[in-house]
Image 1: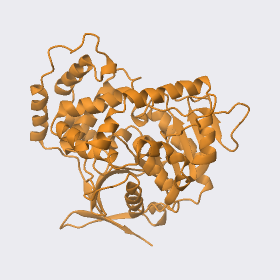
Image 2 (image 1 turned 60 degrees about the horizontal axis):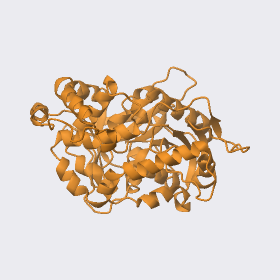
Image 3 (image 1 turned 90 degrees about the vertical axis):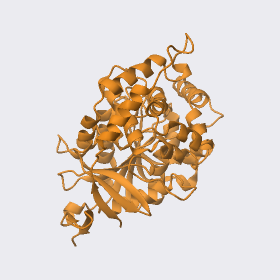
Image 4 (image 1 turned 180 degrees about the vertical axis):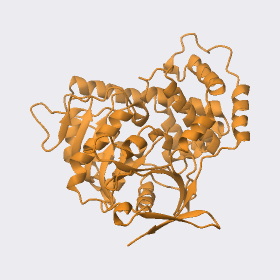
Length: 438
């Protein structure tokens, strides 16, 4: 169990004013360095100038902060760590506890377009969810572990403690990006509590000695392009995170460019004149700046498995997901899962019960048994940041997976079904303690 206290997002006015001054003082070069510079060089000059102007003249931090505070925030103390999290409870006493984990370059805010739709429901036949969205250690108001060699998988232990402290002895997990390793750890080694897993990204390699289909060739070319031209951030994080961290610290335009370049690559179907997308990237960059977390947000790349080992995670027997899991492949992501990769994931990756994506998930003449495969609901309008780009699709997939598999597991006993979760406030230190009625 852990101590939990209420939290309110409240950035001091002088800090907001200071951000504006730093943005106004930042000088872009008078013109691009190369006449033919395009996105292959990184962030385009015109995009940088556009977003600098929008950040100064249009973006309203107080509006974003007010939206954040529309849902309950808390701070928990676990293993000497402070863990910030959002907890959006459903009115439905039978709701499924859902742990939603963000990656990089994201924050808890990445799930802001889905936590209300998941906790509410328009159709009584649909499941609803008690949504818990923690900030990863080192992000926003979650502290970074002081001890060295903190592995991504260590976060699974912390988040499992958090969920149990909230009274959720059984729960579902949603994740993508680098934190797929966290979800995999929960689904492989915390099966007493993690009962169902949904991923919208996972490395699923194919054997080297097979003839690739056209769809697989396209996915392979995309993967090779990512590895060759877009992996600089990963190399920097794995080798010299302090160097880039210190360069970006207290540098809002630097933070924006570092984060923006990845937003462009893994979600570039979004036009930059889309106000919602612009607000999302500026909110993310503001959170990194105000909380001073840009360096610590990069640190998870220093101690994770090597890239090769990360790709091999799915085929390592120790990492085999033992609980039912579902996978959604969004077409603008860095990697698409081909049909045979899905089949391989059934055989080697774990107990796949749900798949939805752009590529038709059938092996030639081979239908994967006992797996819900869908070719009509293609996910071709989002990428790595699916919760921001395609909230309706992600919500639908989480619900469909829960309808497919949660009922086959023993139901989690929600705090509200056993007398309810009672919050008691200590007037001395204002900490919120969770007391469970028996």
